Length: 310
Image (cartoon, rainbow, N blue to C red):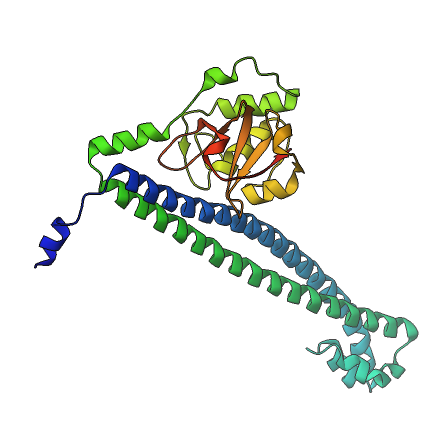
């Protein structure tokens, strides 16, 4: 049998099987998306630390240069007097510790000059420490960039695979799959009491994004991933949250499911890889996956892990 014949003989993918495959692939993509968000935050933190280390090293280099000018003048004067060639070499040596080993050469200097030379040595020690710290932070930066690229590749691989599954469905089946995936149920949320003005503001923003696209790694204004939506919504209420569902869970006060209030954040899967904002009556607003837009959905549709109150 030819390869072409074996492919054409393959059974057509039905809607239920496509749904299972696509949901599994989207879940893998979302897990990688949340890891990507965490790697991106770690990269930003490493870049800030590297910048600070570079500034410290640069400032210390200026200090060393100025001190060496002063001490160099002392040593040069002594050299012209006939006996300070060794100390002159020490001032500009690549090994400041050599000063300690040959401290006897300070005998020809006054106490003020010897003190100045000691300052050079200490300043160069600090310079070396700052340069080492900067190099270490640069290594962290490069490691985070590599992790970021890896997670980006993982997201895109799973999204491509999901598209390939969907492309195997006929057009009418794709429409059926999309209709079955969507929900709103806004009528169930009418007249719900809101716990406080901050939660009201966060909910108002989140509901204002209904219908916006799911975009992995995004936090608005027109596209969101799950933690990007909750971060942006609570940001409008004056609460700063990290762009990561797992880190949002770690940073909030834990709330039992029986005590959920509108505005609380609800989390799913283990390890945590999805978050939505609770609205009441068992419903949440969330950014689900690339096949669906920001929507209202029951919290029972995914494996529930816990809740926090920002």
